[in-house]
Image (cartoon, rainbow, N blue to C red; front, side, top):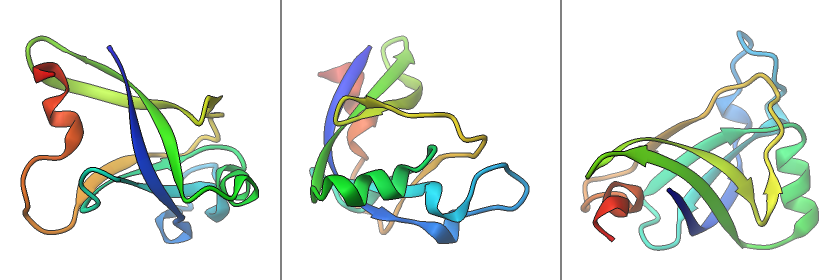
Length: 110
């Protein structure tokens, strides 16, 4: 299943981990417009520089989701139609505070 979510973004060099092949400027934290407390951290070759160059505060992030009747896993595949380029880094998700489920957890109920 593919889902596109509107998200804000911020460069996240603090997510850099020297155990991976990426550079600090290749990490971005995306927050769901629908629920900004929920975020996804993604790394991709030149991602932060590309986001700055595009100059958009809100972008369309496409996710590839899998599961049966409920979400079991997902990955970000593109941002504003541009595929992510593997840079040998990591990604993750999280939330700040406790204010209901994050948007992707309801994907199979839509």
